[in-house]
Length: 114
Image: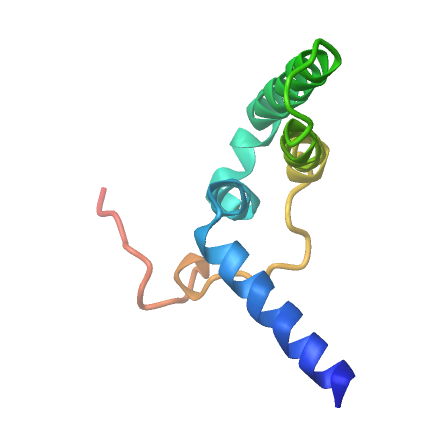
């Protein structure tokens, strides 16, 4: 019973984070076929997150509040997500079925008259 409760809580949390956290929304859009071209430039966002983590670490070393450690972990996590999306988005989706409108015999395909 406790396992089911934890499982349902984690599924609900994942769904909430997937819909409302800006980095997850951006990564979902990059994973779509139209967004694959933005995978490599998105890696630059990952570099910025890692740089922000380095700045926070320097601030902590110089006497800033230790709660900035939470931000450091968040920045590193988001930086790794964006660094990972570049190489992954460089490969096309091999198993995506062809759309009906792209098929030559489809009535949905626009025919151009010469």
